[in-house]
Image (cartoon, rainbow, N blue to C red):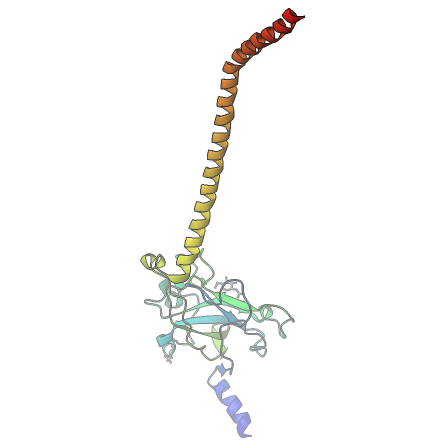
Length: 245
Ligand SMILES: *[C@@H]1O[C@H](CO)[C@@H](O)[C@H](O)[C@H]1NC(C)=O
Ligand SMILES: *[C@@H]1O[C@H](CO)[C@@H](O)[C@H](O)[C@H]1NC(C)=O
């Protein structure tokens, strides 16, 4: 009887607290699980299966603003608009999906993730308050899923652990940064060696043609000479035996 009462208690408050907490995915991804402006969480599969008519929203909040987020907040208003985040809006709502988008059980082998911050087209478009726009800084952020039936919140997950993004490197530090530096150096060295090889090949080719050209010109100059000399010689050679015969 007591467990049953405890189960009913949250329902009496109007919103069910689900045990699940969203988390960064462990799926292997080509792009990083976190970048400078995005992060990837697992889809809430088999979490909201009792809420067929609900729309599942993702709430993205500044780490320190989770306690002040009010579940009665409406998604499509300026109070929860991505364009106002992180100031004055401390938490925005995005990635709304019906339960049909999160089939349960998840098909074997499917990568079922959500990339938060992947939509750049609506970053500054105030007519799209639920934009899944790029995150404005390294955070940390926390996220939770919230199920709304109409405008009524019916169920929510717990908040995720704080999620910190990769810090964008200031331009001045990139030239001295370890891996970036060596990668740049390799690229520059490769390009320089290729250019040098081309230059060298060109030089060799030029020398070759120059050489054969001067040979040719000298031969055209020397040919009549040698011919005359040869003719002279042959005359001489022919004359002599002729004279002797
Ligand atoms: C949430 O907002 C509603 C009105 O929009 C208000 O009645 C309620 O007290 C608020 N809850 C909290 C915890 O601030
Ligand atoms: C998500 O919200 C947008 C704007 O509020 C709406 O146009 C769209 O139909 C919603 N999508 C789903 C799957 O609920």
